[in-house]
Image 1: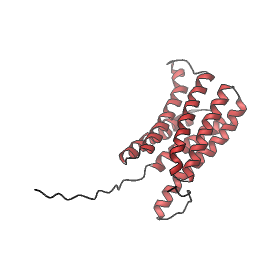
Image 2: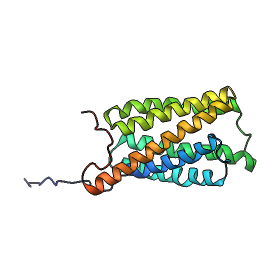
Image 3: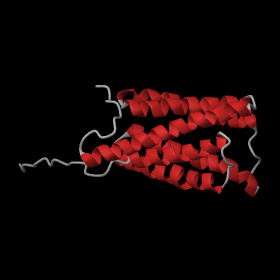
Image 4: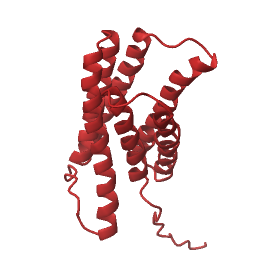
Length: 196
């Protein structure tokens, strides 16, 4: 009988969460600057949506899969695809690939993302307070935007834009906190301890 030794295999790959959170956070801040009425919707936002909000988060989701993190995989890949579908909803009608969605369709789209985000929020209850804040403010943002589209209420969508910028900044804070805390090997940026 051949004796086999078990190898101690350690995961030495980088934490992909900061990449995903920064792709989400920075793109969210920029889109919601538009929603708040600070500047028009243009290619700056759409390029961020495709490349940083979209592709970077999908890459982070794949990296989370490699680490065996189902929550991270689902969150980052889904929100990366959210950004790609949102850009598609804006660009496809201009290319003649279908009609521009009306307010009821956009309300349904945003409401479904709100439901998904609220469900994912419950997955953060074992995580840091910072991550919980990102997800609850994102759920609120989706529901505010959905109601704004359903009621065709420009004022509510403008308020949602400011709330969305808070959400995006909180994701950036969480991401950069993870990076700096890892670099210094101690807590430089408080994230709120995860629940046991």
